[in-house]
Length: 79
Image 1 (tube, helix red, strand yellow):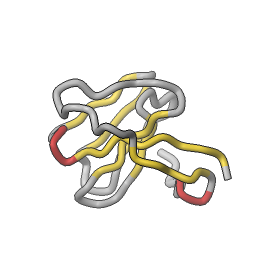
Image 2: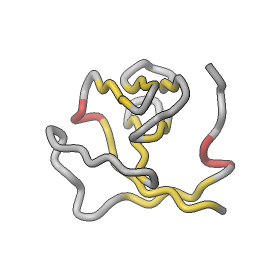
Image 3: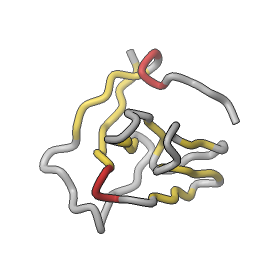
Image 4: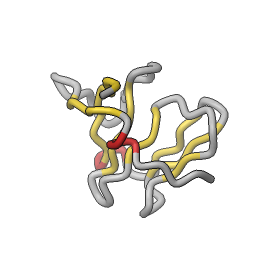
């Protein structure tokens, strides 16, 4: 698994209004930010990804979220 700091590549902006934790959207420009460790992964990760604390993991276009209430949906824009 690669350890890439997504903040060096993208600027992130919270999605407003914030979606409900039980209905998080997925799209190519949407990312999930873990509120516990501040890790960011794509909402549709194509490579193996995980935040530091393990709340967010993903691979093959699927994301697993242990605690959706501790996730913020953000939109990424290239710097």
